[in-house]
Length: 619
Ligand code: ADP
Ligand code: MG
Image (cartoon, rainbow, N blue to C red; front, top):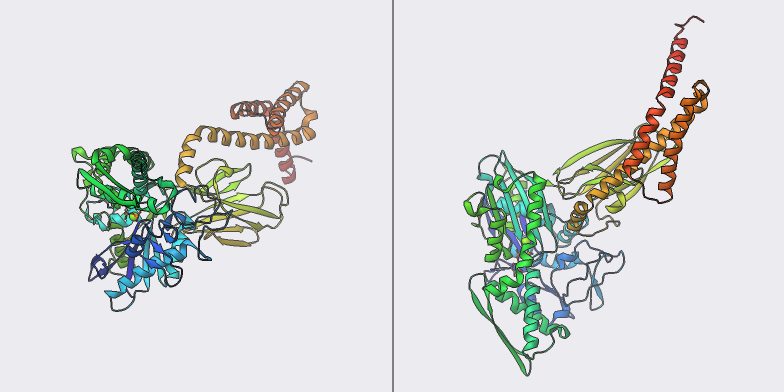
């Protein structure tokens, strides 16, 4: 097998690395630069320009220079926040159509723009190799959903690369930090604050294998937010100094953004810096002294937002921070001293456990890890395996509009799990399988990944058995199999690039699930009590019809009263009234106890019938 390169396709910067004679290396361009800005400029004619040249051209050509395209990967117009960022270039985000960038009469898809970046990285890697690389491992944030992972895969294919594996960035980083040499059962937190995403993963080392215990994060939190906060502050200062309105001029906005980012980076090593923007307009120049303290004051709220994800991941993994052995920092923004202090404080690293490990270059760790994973796949690192986890629960909608989880959140992949279901109506000819992703109890509150119909051999309700199996492959792609167990008729549907993916923030989903946990559980109990009530009332009515005459009037009346009580609650619920699960459960219990004599009577009759059939009773 040929070499498999590792690519960190970042929101802000991209890198390519490869394992050479057993050593992973980040590859540099002809000027020795190892980071390639993820920036693509589309000129009026000719080929797109990528990387440093494009980044430099941004101030002069903000409308045709595409940045942060990763934010749009696998996204659709309907995603509420698709166009939230003021990026300077046009973005078409309409209805359910994929987001595009219209430039010079052509609609650029995010995959095509990313492919331009990947082509440059591929060529860059090829210069140091005997032949152009054909295969790659590409990293994505842990919280990318299927649509986003698939878009990344497609970008690789458009760049002429065979994408061997899509892996999570934090998992790759841990590999690069060489944490596989830690003692058995070591636990590691990976804190990755880049330009556009924040990821926190907790890993455990098991016999040389990394297992992801939990992942948490936000695909819209990073250095860009810090830059924005600083730009906002500087715009005010600029206004007070009598300068031009920044919002009215994309060129000025781009220059200010560039200067702000540079100042921020300088303040990671210096305590004070000068921001100088000569001739913003022919008659106005801007100069400002910015201290690290001011920057920290302005951006503390952004950095503080990472705390909740760290705590959530610890909770998900069932760990306290003292249980961790190491915390590693990844992503360019983690070079900021404030971020290091914060991470150290969140995990209580001050007293030495866990240890804050900053030995690797945080910008390069992800690409190196991807290269190591490439090495594993091509046989160079055979003693190490990678295991990822599902970021959100997957399941199907069941009767009553509830979410039935088949693969819970944070399950190690690849994984295959199944469950058997039955029909709720007599002689049902088919059943709709509605595949869901999310943490909410009600199906409608989760994301719909897709739906399909399975034909059934008609049978009385409860008799037909259907098996549903979910399989998540090593790339995190979900394959759903549904089978009519009697006829053997089955359907397998791959949920890749599903048009129905309702692509909101994963993070929001988790927050909402916590926020609504109480209501959600009440709702589930209520629906379950309702289903139970419907079943018992039907059975009781049938029983009364046949055997009611044999019961003493008093017992019959008691059953009728209990039935009426349950029926009243069900009617109330149907009309949309609010009834509690507890009240319905109480009524169910009263009905159960009232029907006790009826149930006993029915049981006696059935037994007699059986014995009679066997001819034991004297005729
Ligand atoms: P991504 O993974 O999103 O592409 P990176 O890991 O390359 O991002 O991080 C880019 C972010 O890191 C940018 O916001 C950049 O300004 C910031 N950054 C890079 N170097 C430093 C530094 N020395 N100090 C502070 N921030 C930095
Ligand atoms: Mg990154």
